[in-house]
Every structure is written in C-alpha cells, then in structure tokens.
Image (cartoon, rainbow, N blue to C red; front, side, top):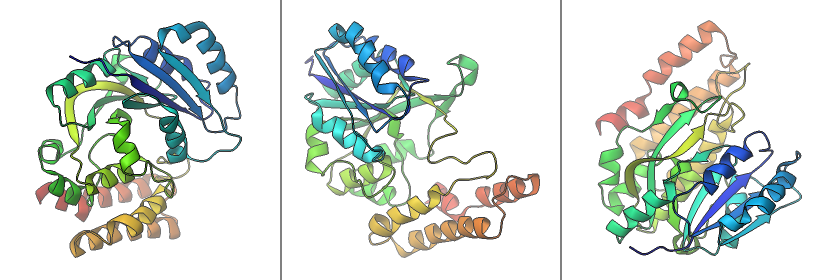
Length: 302
C-alpha cells in the first residue's frame, strides 16, 4: 500500500473554545505522512495565537505545517480554498476548528483508496455530538438514499444531487487535483458542501462512500444553518434558494423545481407571517409541514 502525503486543512473562526480538541485529534492520527494547514478567517479571539503556541510544541508530529490568516472574515468556501491552495499533499482532509477526527480517520480513507483505485472523492459516516464527547451525546449522521446514491453512476448521482445533498460535508476526503480541476469551492455561496459535490458530479467524477466513522461533528447552535432561541429556523433557506437559482433550477426537472420552490415559499411565509417565532403552536405547525414536505416524500419514493 502506498502512503501519499495527506494535508489536513483546519478551518477556524473564533474557534478558541474547541480548537485544542481538534488539533489533538489530528496529532493522534495513526497515519503519519501528514501536513497540517490551519487557515483562519479573521478570528476576533485568540485562536491564531493559541494555534501558533500549539504548533511550536507539536510541529514535529507533521511533515510540514503552516498557519494562514486574513484580516477580514470571508466565509467558509473562501477559507477552505485558501487552505487547500496552500496544501502540498496529494489528498486533502478538511475539518472545522470545533470538530474532531477519529484516530484512524486518515488511515481508513487511505485503505479505502488502496482498494478502490478510481476513487477521488470519498465521504464517510459521522457522529454528531453536543457538549462533551461522551457516548450518550452521539447522533449518527446518515441520510436516506445513501446506498442508492453512492452505488449509482456519475450521471445518476448528478441528477440526484439536483434534488438534495447526500454526502455529509465534514467527512469529505478528496484529491487536490480534483479541487483544482473543478475550480475549487464556489465562493458565491455561504456554504461549501452541496455546491462542491454538485460541481464535482457535473464534471462526471463519481462520489464514493466508506461505511466507517471518521469524524465527530459538533452540533453547534451558532452554525449558519441553525436558528437561535427566538426562531424555529434561520434565514439560511435564502442562501439555499440563491444556490438553487444559480445551479439547480436551470438543470433540474420541472417537478423538482416546483417542489423546491414550494418549500422555499413555505419558509418565506412562515417568516413573513410571524410563524417563525419559537412558540409551542408554531413549532407544532412547522413540524406538521416538515413531515408532509412534498420534496421529502418525492425523494423517498422516486
């Protein structure tokens, strides 16, 4: 088995509270041919200073290491692009500054590509958690349709990705040459995972999956996809609609466009009519519409 250089790219933004756990999970990798890239997106706390101190003590654990900084916050896709661009490894593993890698994360991916020579973009299982990393807090991340999606050819995968995302973004492992070939992560959007998967698939590159846990993913209430204490859902649905208008609607079927538009306007009018306020009645109404979502039903049966 070959042992290519793998670059682990840590994306940080005000990550001081959790970054030690992240960095230690990288140091503890059983696979040792590693480069560490930390790319910070204009943190206002002491994240960068802490990372520099940690690297001074632990840099011998890596083939090479570096920290990249910027004066202003530019968003997740741009931060990912800076890190991957600076990476010297053949393979890339991106991790957020509040998530953790399993100790055999990279080793599992390398074993998978050794057995699947054509694999260039691979996803895996993830375990979500809240608070401390203890078993009772784990939430397994798996999506309906995994087997159907990852066993399909590139044409079918692309059509399915026009409906919804399948791979869990924090687990992605990919060749740097693929990132370069498709033009990197799309900085027009505020999220990176679904746009990148769709772009890769559109370029007829198959997405693979290995059924092992490689990432512990922190369920963070401050995430751009999550609501706050006063609202049921955030305005992230507007970002999804922006992505849909640019990349999905021009290429999907009429029925998928109608179903996605229906979901967007449902959320839009929940907001407009004050139904997004976190009350018991509003939550019950929202849950009822969620489980009767026509798009979810269509994806389940077609």
